[in-house]
Image (cartoon, chains in turn purple, green):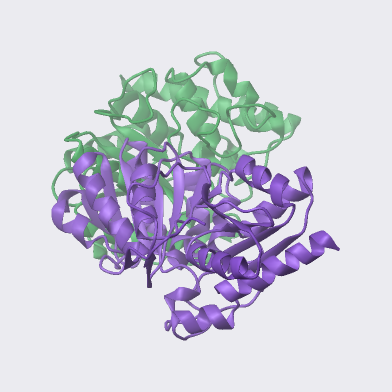
Length: 319
Length: 280
């Protein structure tokens, strides 16, 4: 079995900050806009290095999306930064009309997504953002799993022509993908080959899936772990190839079960290769205050939950 | 271009507007007729731009329409200015047309840089374009037209605050101050009170066009606005117009905001609007 030692512990938002700084050096067309959360979303290094290309918008996210659309019209590559909640739900119509429908090359970079935002509670813990964004035509949706992948994704989206939603988080979590791991938008990453069940995980749940894989192995179950970092366009080929072998699946994400990765996978499976699918996701509730690990446990988003789901999927397959 | 020629273009644009809206029995003639002088002045006298159309608008003056529902006047002026063929006006609001009900970029209609229709967004987009021009050392001007009812949208005031704070001084925003919106008079629906004072308080240089349906005054004020750019303040032009101007029975009421004339009304309207450049 392939091993993924913990290389370091870092927050994914810092991967974004490092990627953005590198982009500032590489590409003079890259500009950054932030709505009063420069430190929190790790745009401060870019701001310091490229003050003329950094735009403080204040607490006015709708305006930020419009300005980004205007800058993109003139050929710039704007990266907007704020919390995931304020990057999506708050400004949905601005994104829909001025960015997605208008085909603008804007990169919407969203930190503090999901339950792992922690103590601030449900007002800030958006669990609907992937669904909101994946529904928009012309929108690419990416949810990387660790620091290195977030940095790689940040670099990749600058070269991708079109609107992108890039989602990352607040807590310090394991860095387990080597720095040189290839990142290709729309191409799933096979982390572990297996034959009994396919586990499709995104974001912070990828590490949980790898842990679940070890636990399943101890029970004699061979799980295939696939990292779906790009929610849209979804890598259907990788999903179907895996399912052809395992004949059952688990999806795992820090998001509502409605509208998330599980939904997208279910759509592919029911149309092309029907099979049992269990979804590890938030079950149609809001979050609450608490420590990230406590919340992940309470809302059922841990390795143990993935193990249970995998066993259930296998049982349904064999029934 | 001399005044008489501009006025002739405006007459033809008004015919185009009424005919387009009549043909599909939908669209917004009232505001379109009211903003005819401004758009003709901008595209035939004030703005410096190049054809064929380029999205990025480098080293060109650019225009955004935030109140996208008055698309008929914009489409007519763009066609008459040579952005696309005049005969394409006949496709307005029809299936497979590039002339969508509200302006859009998806069909690549020359002259349109962002979709508009959902109100309140155009000023922000214009600011972004203006700041990108500064980064590109491009000293041309960005123009944006908004409606007066649109001033009720919160995003407008986010953008107003931002533009003054960041000294976006290569920007001229215009408000079509016709006093009407869908549900009635603006002051009845949601009173804007002293709009000029509001924009001044936000840090903008404010000019007024008292008679926005007179070509000469419109040109004079817009030329003056251009001279005030690049002085550390964004410019706002409060343009008083009459909804439905040029067609007597469409004037002085909000009723013609978003309805189309029937055959008889079309005939009555066209009798008041001289054909100067040839109908499409």
